[in-house]
Image 1: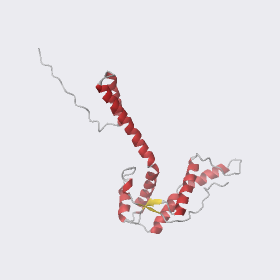
Image 2: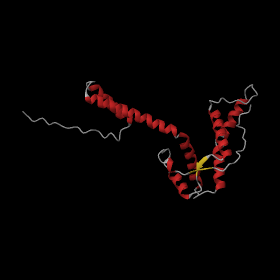
Image 3: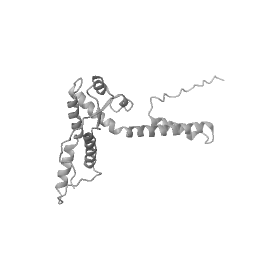
Image 4: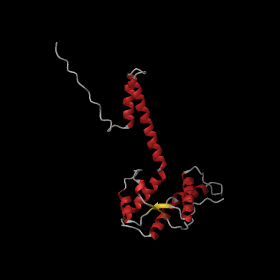
Length: 195
């Protein structure tokens, strides 16, 4: 009789696999186990943990979605200008430009709504342009009150941090110092809804 070599298989590195791939592996293991065994209970617990992890990541991204978009826009401005810091007046002008960033699409939507037989300027509030109009109105009100939060670009450290910020990283958002933009009137553009 010959010796039979028993080979011990090492577990795969789960850090390099994506969550759905890990989940698929665990489901295959779960099907092979007796449903009332300890191993099946542990595998089921691990599956529930992975599902909660995915939901948590998705909710975290939704919570900070508007802040991430705002930071991405300001990051593009900082990249294009390549200034070490900005004055308060320049920061105010950049904030007004941020608020008016979707005006062209709103004007185009209003023009296309006028091409129909009706003479009233109406845009569906659920449409993309309607959401932009609502967002612009809210940001304009905050700007008029002096409560509109923008990244503080008057400090050199903050500007370099925004320039080097990894786009979409939620955990690094708390390191960016914010300030309220100076109260200013945002010029009226044809994208405001009229009654």
